Length: 119
Image (cartoon, rainbow, N blue to C red; front, side):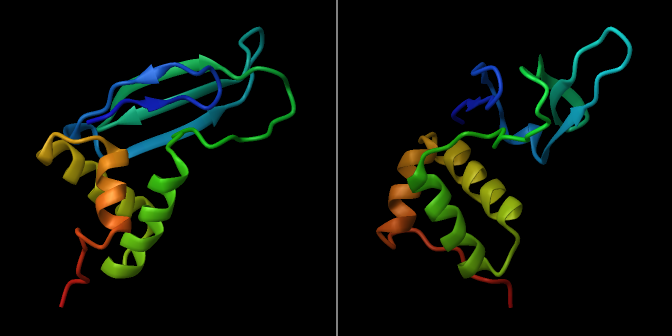
């Protein structure tokens, strides 16, 4: 599975299917500690960094290509699921087929891979 890129510090974070579902949050400054950004997978801390600046604006913490985001919307529509579940389905496909998220997205966008809604 491809690593994800932190939108705050640019670090690459390795993620496996066993880390799903991912959660992320902003922890506010407390005393001398600056605001933190945290990525957690399966209850384990995967990444933590200081949020630069103090504007309080949340950025997209999981940076993928436009093709991946477009395919994510297609999967959500096809499978009748949330965007986060669609991303998890795509990540699982990438992991089980040992391909990149961009390759999975290309297959989805070309209609060679589809995700059917549960019946």
